[in-house]
Length: 184
Image (cartoon, rainbow, N blue to C red; front, side):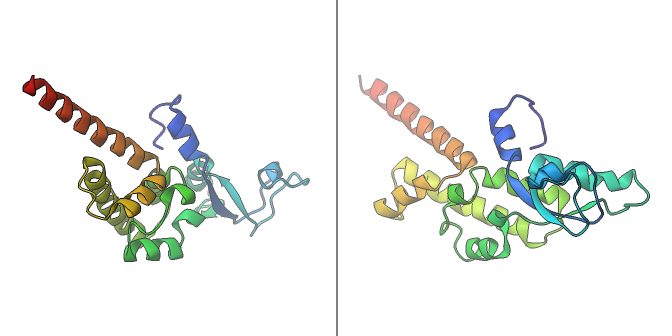
């Protein structure tokens, strides 16, 4: 969500995921963010805000001497909480990432830019490596994990994984087509 393409629907959907933010100070005229009838957000209030707004609120502190750490403190979203990370560390293919967040990898990689978390980069890399390897094996037809497990895995693919599946399937289709062509 580096905002490379303003019109990219996937980027818009990924950046609209909500993350918890705790406001360190009273903020006026943003009460609508928490669907509150009051116009203000009180200090120490935690609300869910769209991810695209979080980096802006975190960076305001650089320009305002009263808030050197910024007016908000962000936390990892529910789809990246400690229980999820522990489960993925134990078995990267055990969870349905699509149910957690359709753009799980995009959200996780962008969280790295605004949050300090030692475990997150390791879990993102491990999960990606393990899941994409199993996905490629399954799509290529090896089905090392067994058909039932593979079918279940396909239902839980998040958007990046779905794109990779499409690329692998296209490669397999081209190989089959070239093989058929050489036989004629």
